[in-house]
Image 1 (cartoon, one colour):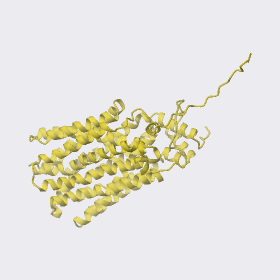
Image 2 (cartoon, rainbow, N blue to C red; image 1 turned 120 degrees about the horizontal axis):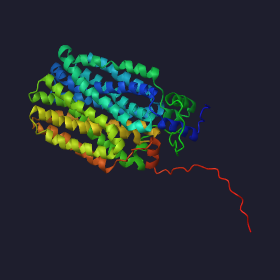
Image 3 (tube, rainbow, N blue to C red; image 1 turned 90 degrees about the vertical axis):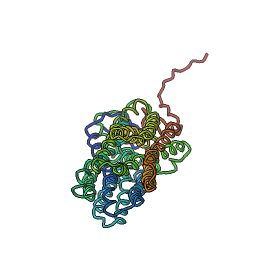
Amino acid sequence: MPPFPATASGSSSLLTRLDDSGFTKRHLTIYLTVLAGHFLCGFVINLTGVILPGIIRTFHLSSQQAGFFSSALFAGMLVGAAVAGTMSDRFGRKYPLAICILIYALFSLAAAFAWDYQSLVVFRTLQGVGLGAEIAVVLPYIAEFVPSRHRGPLVTMATAAWLIGLPTAAAIGAAVVPAFSWRAMFVVGTVPVLVSALILVTLPESVRYLLRRGRADDARKIVDSLCPGSRASTGVFTAEDSRPDAAGGSLRTLVARPYLRYTVSIWLMEVCAGAFLYGLSSWLPSVLEEQGVGLLKSFTYTAIITAVGVTGSILAGQLINRIGRRVVLGASFLMSGLLCLVWGTASATAAVVILGSAASFFGSGLAGSTLFAYASELYPTASRATGLGWAAAWQKVGGLIMPALVGFVLAMNTSRYLFFLLFGVISIIAGIAALAATFETRDKTVEQIAREITAQPVPTPQRITHHEPVETP
């Protein structure tokens, strides 16, 4: 088969083949590789709730110091997410992804040997840079190489894998921390080095990135390996931002008039989602322990509650393909908020676990995973990782504020109901933002989404017509 030319029509043919393809073994290999890195990212981030009680005892921390330690990670993640998205749009997906994973793995090893509170905060902050950067790169990578009809389910499944890191951290912590101390959890966090090496050896570059850089031959080879025997469909298709030399990594695109209301809505939802997820995972074991639940049981209950959120992420992929992103986001955030208000009134163990699991199912599961799927597909290819990176950065703003705020509130010795009230209010705010300003992306390619938002007309294919001569009287 002759190579496709580096033209708009050639790019369109390649992208149509990519979007209309079945899910092949090659797709699966690539997907499982990036899934492993994203799962380990979730594991390392969510070590905080597992290691925090031990760190408090080791370094004799106050509630404010403990809250600052929890927030330090998210300060690093904020920087990493904001910077990595722009770098990925300019320099590709593959190598930035491998470097991000390597960074957070190496600083996990450094944190294991921290000699005091200050050094631990520094290492955890630097580790956060790699963790935040990974999130900004991996989801656009998935969204750009999987067939269109699988995009929503596979991105939300990746988010589910990330969320599995939280109950996995709690489960491993229950076995490792009592026997080897909290430092051993950071040693476990060095495993991602292997995934980083695997990415460098086996993963291809994003086809859409290659086309945008004018590397049509390289893009064609990757499409041929992913979609053997496939042919372009006959539908109208444009490669509006896959043309060579398209500008990449522009923050101006995110806040330009066509995208502004959707960008503000995403950022607000991400702040609330980050506050919910990271505030809860950081403090729930400690809050349960203070309420009389033993350390091991608090880890177990946290694992159960957060594991239910994973089932919500898995289900989200099917729901958003059937009823759309807007409805799932709005309804799920609102349900999570209402459940948190009730959760705070529960005292019996069964009620605490059931209500907490339900709140996690709707908040972290359905809403959280749908939000990242939506953010990874809303923006054009030239600014997709930048858009996801800034969305992830605002999520880290929530993660930065909420643990410190909870630590401040708990230090005031106020009613523990205020802890749950905070999570209820932020979830309701996110639900209102979702219903007010979400662009529905269901059943659209990423190029169609960009074209509709910017109100670009669909080009009419040129047809060759034969005119019979007209006789004049």
